[in-house]
Image (cartoon, rainbow, N blue to C red):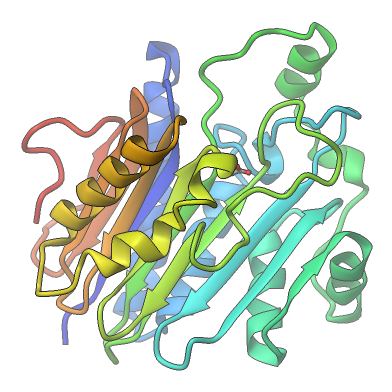
Length: 298
Ligand code: GLY
């Protein structure tokens, strides 16, 4: 049985000086997830491992690199879903949790729920999940940009991972710091099943990135999975999902997909989107910061 993994570092403009950091971060994430899959781990384990790497990297807009809300705080959303039994878990507007994807995974394993704010924080504490003073997640660069009310155009939005394990189980996970200066307790698409992620072993799994207010009404992740019907290539389905979003709403978005055969696909209408993937048919991971013709079809 084939194994496969793809990660994204968010849809946005990536300035030249940040290309290397985006490539390195996505590569490290895909390698972490791949190692789990190669050792016989499950797709949710691989997704969690990969997303944790991205959460720990200040290059990306979640956890250590999260943008600040209108109160100068870091609030995070994350969710995970597996496609065998439709298990899922999510957290939203949480503070002081360096790896919200791990809380989401714990919720999925216990009882599927979307927990918000202090309810999710209490859950994390009760289950021995790593926590920290909320100020520790505020990166210097983010604090300065927020204080100076800088117009920032190159802040990527959200990270995610999709994986297929050796048992044929698909999983998707998404984690975000949301949108810069967002209203306190605003919740975007990333923790919303169907919009920020979806997994169904029969058709495929997807993680999305971009403007939550645009992604939610087009239910982007589920829309992308629906386009996989009829054995469509995931690259085609990803492109069709982004075209659908473009035809209905304004906003930037991207998505990554894997189908049950382990084929990967990705698309975005933002200027850039960091992405890396690895499959059985690759000798080493492929890494990109932009989709161009020929980059990333398998
Ligand atoms: N996609 C992340 C957000 O809109 O919050």
